[in-house]
Length: 291
Image (cartoon, rainbow, N blue to C red; front, top):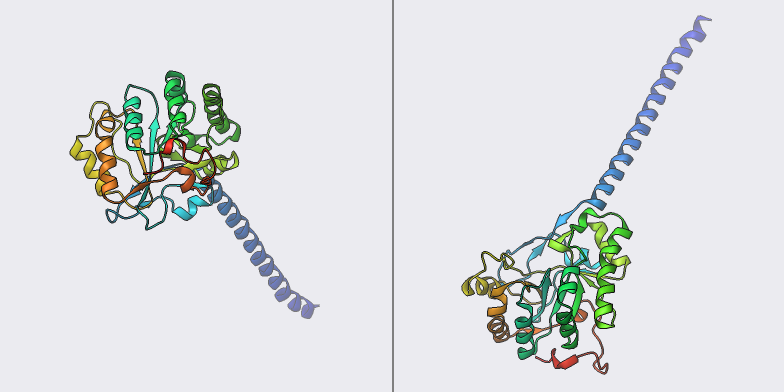
């Protein structure tokens, strides 16, 4: 009897410690799984402000997401190329009288551009929308109300901001809105990129911009040219605002300077790999791209 007890004690202890070890491993695995899931969820819905750093002027800047990471969701901020090509875009939050002068200059210089418009701009300036389309420019989606889209996690709510712009554009032009989207204020989340992609949109950020939106503190010619000439680089997506008096005033000279540096002006179709074939009558409306 005493021998059996002596044998049982170490066996029981071994069993006890084995159960503790296995239990600890299980708890550790569960906690790890929960932490991974929480981290994944945090990443999925975390918001970002699009930002850039310029380690070397005249070279592709570093974004807070890489070209490769963005391309996985049909999103773009520049083209990784050595060719001197740039993509000119304007954000049009509202109309305050400078868009016509910008369009006049683009027509004179035969330069194509993309205009990202809000619901407010569509309501206030339908004639400008018609002119953009007629003169061969792309009109893109800048949302109906210009909200912080990174705060929207619901696909249906996200879609409503885009579909309202689509409907207004179709009513004004009789055509479908080109499927290019720019997040207001550059605020986005990884989930937004997936949502836009799922809805058939390419998301367009930028690799060159400057402070041109402050109506009370417009940049001088020297300030504008310092940024827009000094930081231009092959494959640049340039963001300007149509509300800027400075842009309306200096645009012609700026375009000439970029051309003098050897740059040509590409289209978003080209940037995203959707370039139309040369035998398509819509491929080069008005000859704008022939610069």
